[in-house]
Amino acid sequence: MSSSDIFIGETIGTAILILLGGGVCAAVTLKASKARNAGWLAIAFGWGFAVMTAVYIAGPLSGAHLNPAVTVGIAIKDGDWSNVPVYFAGEMLGAMIGAVLVWVAYQGQFQAHLTDREIVGGPGAQDTAAKSVEAQEKGAGPVLGVFSTGPEIRNPVQNLATEIIGTFVLLLAVLTQGLNDEGNGLGVLGGLITALVVVSIGLSLGGPTGYAINPARDLGPASCTPCCPAQQGRLRLELRLGPDRRSADRRRDRRGRLQRRLRLSGHPPGTIDPRSTRRTYRPHTTEPRSTQ
Image 1 (cartoon, rainbow, N blue to C red):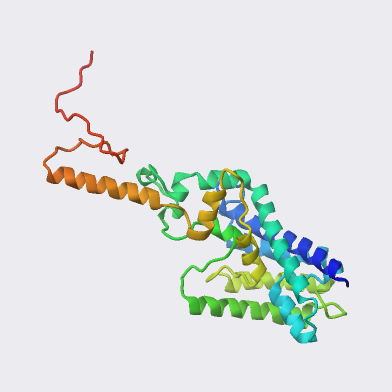
Image 2: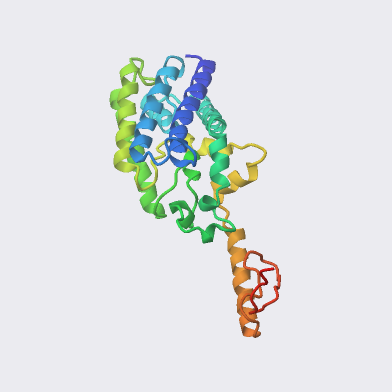
């Protein structure tokens, strides 16, 4: 196969992989999605079907590596590294394209999710009687999981070991059961076997870290933050730092400090508007309001 076939096949295949895999994460996660809260089982099978679809599309062109780890594994087995850079380039570009397509398909849901005060915090969210789980979390918000994975418990050694184990299982399945007759990519039966293995890894080993097991799945979308002009900065902050609660926290801190100063200075309660962070004083009176 030529370098152009490899590059085109890997670009298309990885784009399909991220589109369908990231799409199921968005469907389960985002507000106003009909599949929201469908659960981990939907995500695991969604990624498995994404792998199978991408392999059958890209297989005739490039052998459907779709994963830098698979490319390195096959290169070590064959001792041929000449096409590895082409595979890497196609996989990274395809992952970027797939992430952008996920954003386009779910743009309205991203907009609703990232502007919901119960989800990302903000003025008024603390007064909500029934907060969502996301509103109570201090770490990165769920939008992060659409475009990259992250651990539930931040233990670098454990997280690294989990990803190594999952990737090792995937490579064993590909190299022993999944290769085509030429041995340079996934075959027809190999695509189905690999898809089922990915489902198994997701169900068994995906809990601690979200089972990236594919550098392109995380690095591609992170290198090209999918965005629209209105949400570019906000989504980039969400991807890197989690929901921006810092402004709301600062406002609450200022209100608390001002209330304490008022109490210490002898001002009666109710002389500051709790909805404002400015020193806005209101007249204090115990007289009833006129009904006229």
